[in-house]
Length: 329
Image 1 (cartoon, rainbow, N blue to C red):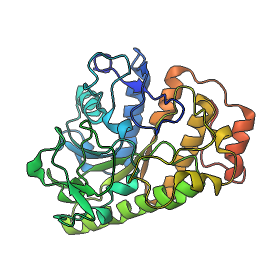
Image 2 (cartoon, one colour; image 1 turned 60 degrees about the horizontal axis):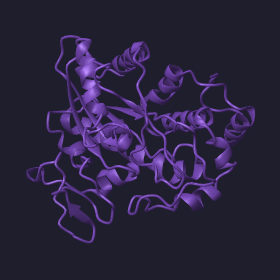
Image 3 (cartoon, helix red, strand yellow; image 1 turned 90 degrees about the horizontal axis):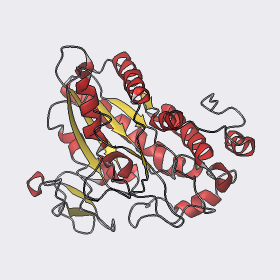
Image 4 (cartoon, rainbow, N blue to C red; image 1 turned 120 degrees about the vertical axis):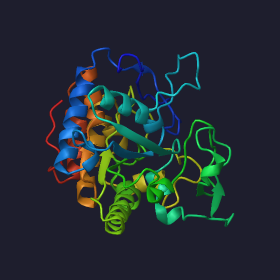
């Protein structure tokens, strides 16, 4: 199944907003991918996600994120509307291992996790100054009556936005909620503090409330660690990002307010991957139950070079030389 469904690593040109960049096919040897899935399944079983138990009901999983989740096609694919679609790929691989899955997604390319939160997306919102109807997206039917925050632009037909799915739980209680944030967020401490950590804390609190109301187990909140761009990032700071997606502070300003040299942290594939991995590990202290190391799997699958010592030190200094993960690549 992995061989039959191409999967791509990200590579963004200078000045790009980080949305929908992809160039390389997933390695034909699917050993690493299956190993990672099995590793994650052990973690989920340890957290007692009922839908993942053998012979039980299907695992009900909601993916919330951006283009790293819905999976734009490689640049050289003839049909540029044919998505890789990570939720579907997860379902195929899991079911090939005898695990039944019901998957849903809530995705907006190039956007932050914060824009998907229930506090920003109340059910039945009709206030045009606050929200807009999701009525022109082929993958989300108008009848679902979904809304997203007003002001996000541009919007593409490849997105599948419906933040209301989290609380609606259309198939019964979620077993797992898998989230990813913008690829610029995790290496920058002030972006983590203003965006990533508060978003996860709200999702963790909401998950607790859903469990109390349904009298079911709390959904496992899984942080999906994304991978680095093919050649790292070539510009000195993030750009201002997608309109309407950065409402709690401009990413450029927040980068200047953060310790360390951002360019040094993300200057190549190995460095950016290391910085993302360490930032992702901080989410354990803010509500995440499971860290899905997809980014590190990519680096292992592609044969990552050693991390430049200067870049490693730049990242480690942010954590007072005690980074959350002890990594050697």
